[in-house]
Length: 194
Picture 1 (cartoon, rainbow, N blue to C red):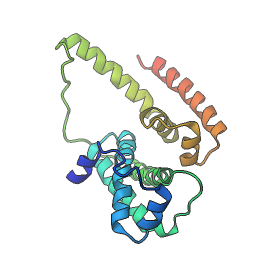
Picture 2 (picture 1 turned 90 degrees about the horizontal axis):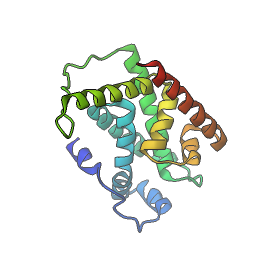
Picture 3 (picture 1 turned 30 degrees about the horizontal axis):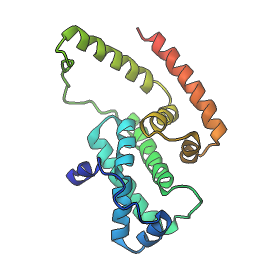
């Protein structure tokens, strides 16, 4: 998985290739699938990292996503949306199943991460920042998985409502409404966590 980590910072390595043509070639050409992998691995990893909160789990699920994409590529149909929407849909299904399985078998971390000092080395500022971050994460993780996913796609991936709707299988209007309700719910949860 070291190779996967090296590719996280990669950008689209071959922007000259037409995506539809590259997908068509990838059905029979491993090198073309490798270009698709390089083009999208960082985005899919980042999405899965924010869903799992763990780099190793994100790596594993990213590998599963691309394995499944390769396996189902012959059945992929161009529908006028970016190929990445199809990959995000696969990643979404994989992480939903993974989260469901984990809820049945909870995992306890063996390592405890020590708090790091802030940029000034001020322990009080570090504590306040850490408490604020923990409150936000607690509120975030108390949201339903679909709403967590919405916020990740919107703020981490910078996707539009239309793109998010394609991934979540909803209309753009439904995504706008869900986004508004999610922000209100998140604010309410943050106010409840003191």
